[in-house]
Image 1 (spheres, rainbow, N blue to C red):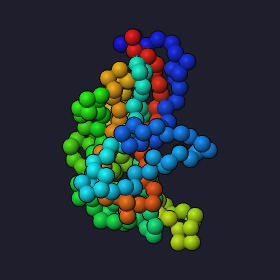
Image 2: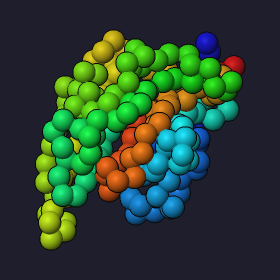
Image 3: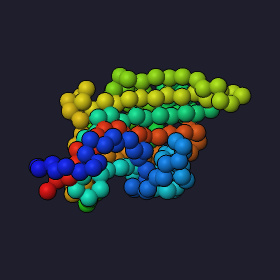
Image 4: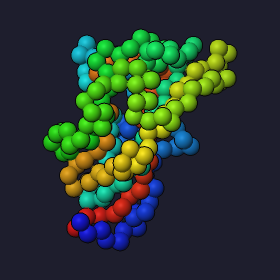
Length: 192
């Protein structure tokens, strides 16, 4: 692999995962259409299995250091469930997928996440809190999954169509008011 100079090399990658690569348009911290908010019904009866994902374009290479998972729910987050509901039926998988939708690497080891606490088997950096933004208050739960603490950052190659992908297969519409995935890292440049 030969990395050449590029104005974006060393540029910071901060991306919300969106359904099947739907583009987001930043504006004062708010993303148009709230495409980043994973609170739909992703069962067969609803939208169907949906992948929230993001990866580099063209021949760029991203080195992803971490992913943040955030859940906010009224009136409270259930300690043993997902959001303000019970365990998920099918669970969430986190994968690296390529242009052919082939799973290149399964970051959850094939073991789905059924409860927000199951995220903690992947990372111990989790926090629970209350926001006083409404009369009742909103419970929030946030996790920082630092890949380098589990071995090494994740490299995503644009020339292979690689992207970090979160597979949702459950109805999350009534479990959370906000549910998002953000990746952070560095654009290493172009492969030639």
